[in-house]
Length: 155
Ligand SMILES: [Zn+2]
Image (cartoon, rainbow, N blue to C red; front, side):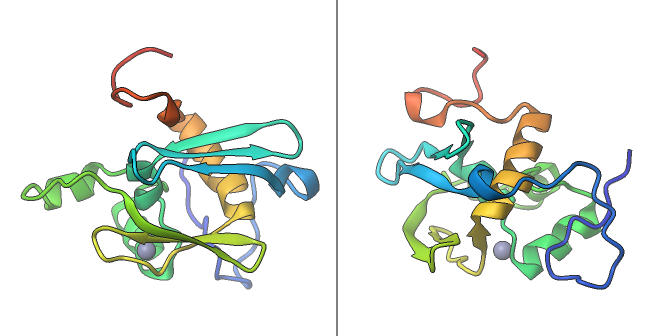
C-alpha cells in the first residue's frame, strides 16, 4: 500500500481518503495530559471514550507543518517515522521534548520543541485522524506517561 497525499494543505488534490474521517466527539478532547517536565509524552482522552498517547519524539516526527510534511513525503515516511532522519542526524540525540505547549484557538495545540522548531499546529483533527491512526499502525502508541523506556517491550 502506498501512502501518498496525507496532506492538509492541498484542497484541490482529490481526497483519496481510505478510512472515514472521525468528527464530532471523536475529535473533541476532554483531557490533555502533557508530561513536559518528565519528558515522556502526551495523552489525550477524547469525548467518544478513546484515548491516544504519543511520545514526544513521535509527535515531533509527525510535525504537520508544510516543511516537515514535504520532507517526509520526499523520504517516503509516514508521520512519526524517523528512520531516515535519525541517520541524518547522528550527532546530537537530545531527547525531544517541548519547551512550551500552547493552545491555538480551541482546535489545536502548538509545540515549541527543544530543537527550536515551532511551526507545527497539531489540530485535534490531525491528532485523532492522522497521528493516532499512524501511531497505532506503527505500534508506536505506547503508554508514555507510565514512566520507563518507551521503546522497551511490554504491551
Ligand atoms: Zn514542522
